[in-house]
Amino acid sequence: METRPWHRHYDYNVPTTLRYPRIPVSHILALAAGTYPDRAALNFYGTELTFWELRAQVLRMSNALAKLGVTKGERVGVHLPNCPQYVISYFAAISLGAVVVNMNPLYTTPELAHIVKTTGMTTFITFDMMYPMTRPLIRETDLRRVIVTRVTDYIKGFNVSTARDLELEEGWYHFSMLIENCTDMKMPRVQVAPEDDAMIQFTGGTTGTPKGAVLTHANIIAGTLQASLWGSATISMIPHERRRVLAVIPYFHVYGNIVAMNWALFNAATQILVPRFEIDELMRIIGNFDEITFFPAVPTLITALVNHPKAGEAGLDKKLGLLNSGAAPMPVELIEQVQDMGIFYSEGYGLSESTSLGIVNPILGLKKVGSIGIPQIDNDVRLVDIDKGVEDVPHGQPGELIMKGPLIMKGYWNNPAETALQLRDGWLYTGDIAQADEDGYLYIVDRKKDMIIAGGYNIYPREVDEVLFQHPKVLEAVAVGISDKYRGETVKACVVLRSGAEATGQEIIDFCRTKLAAYKVPKVVEFRESLPKSAVGKVLRKVLREEEEKKQ
Image (cartoon, rainbow, N blue to C red; front, side):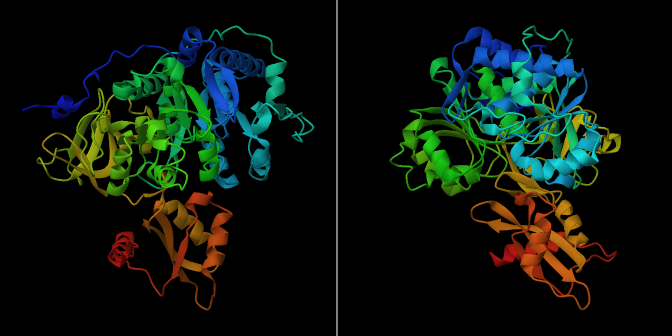
């Protein structure tokens, strides 16, 4: 029996296995700077930094951090949107052997505090727009170093901020001044091994409480090479001088980090940095370029773009080279629309725990509607018994999807119990139920857990539940995902109030806004007399979800 039937569906120039260079992640930048020094590495609202200039900024920041006392293994929080400062901070920290902790700027103070305390973070790089969230955070945690920037500091035409402009508190550091005052351009003399920790990506995994997936230098190198070779069927035909990636997917998310930022450096492509998704602004940015080589995205973003009233006059059909979609399934209508426009596309499946990759449809080869695709290079996949998780299910039957290979995380930060649950003999248990067809193409049929995917963001209902329960008028509550035409899914809260209490849906939503990132906040609230429960009193989220499905 053929053990890897999917190999025959790889595109013609995609290898079935790879020899991965045993290099630290910082060498990806060194490769681009050494081969295309004068090529634009970053384009931020029209202001460009070449690969050589980027390398210089990274080396100066890295040495500045070292002088402040940052050492190998320390956790450095990067709390920034897509901007040059993110790229500089990431590579500066990684060059020292420090561990980058990605932090979503949309997070509230309690969400950020959980990450800081869990990781024992020593250094925090942030920006002034987030002061309402970060000032309380810094007061209640033991952060040794706080570095602040203003996003516009890297846009020509804006004055670079000063320490006074940023209202820095005593002991805080100004990002631009650190670089300006450090003239040391030597590469840090730190030995970094492939097995060393490189990045901590917080995720709910397949359960509710956010946990830090630890990705090594080897994981990130493997992810970067796999993403690059998988897309090479079309990308390799485009000269390096013309390569550009549209970087809207956030770099603080592992998908954007690997498939946009690290991909761009490895392929010597210009990163068009977009710090926020606002569709009209994005269309204006795209209008400044005659071609976009690669656009990693999510279905919500692709839908908004191709259906924009100016999509035709903007020439998106000719302008966009390769679309990659992840985080949620692409609707059939959207797939057909992209194909009709003559745009190459692929969609796939991955987790923070698998360096955002794992299973994907070929670029040129056979794509199957509804399928997440086939296992990527060196990634082994099994479907196992849902209850015991040991025996493979008979062919064609649904089973829990488990994956093994160079993409799989080292474990969860300081959480051996959860690591042992999710990682067994090197196999990552994804919590997703899938089926395979005769070609090895995989189809997600259900979720073992109840994660909601809204606009590409993973939302773990239990986290929303816990906030709902904090409301003084709430007796019982449960969050469920409901269908949403634009976001794919959105959050609905089913609430039972305490006896005699009165509340409005808006009151519940406003309360959640103070404790949850905006994309996690329920958009719909339904008040009920009771919630469906099992014999032992467990709220049956599945029953509520089935009720919603019947309404569609």
